[in-house]
Image 1 (cartoon, rainbow, N blue to C red):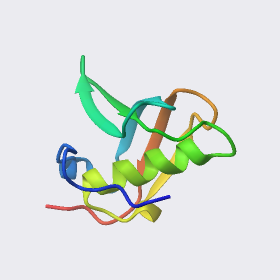
Image 2 (cartoon, rainbow, N blue to C red):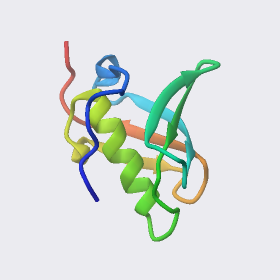
Image 3 (cartoon, one colour):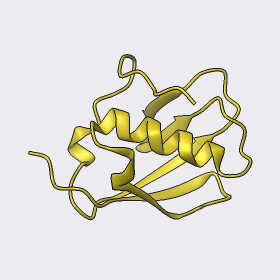
Image 4 (spheres, rainbow, N blue to C red):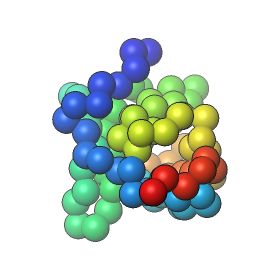
Length: 95
C-alpha cells in the first residue's frame, strides 16, 4: 500500500494531543482517499476493501498523514469491523 500524499488532506494537527480520542466514520471501497469534516463528524473514505484489517490500516495511515504524526501513534480502540471507529492518539502533544 502506498503512503498517502499530504496534498488534498485537511490539517488535523490540532488533534495530536496525548490521549485524544478521534471518532471517525469510514467509507471503504470509495473512489478516492479523502478526509472531510461534515456535520461536525470526521469522515474518512479509503479505496481499500474492508477485509483482514486492510481498510483499518488505510484509515490509520490517512489520519496520521493528515495529523502529521507516525501511524504507530494511533491505535484503533473501538470499531474494528464497524464503520464508526474510535482512534486514540498516544504520541506526544503537538503545540
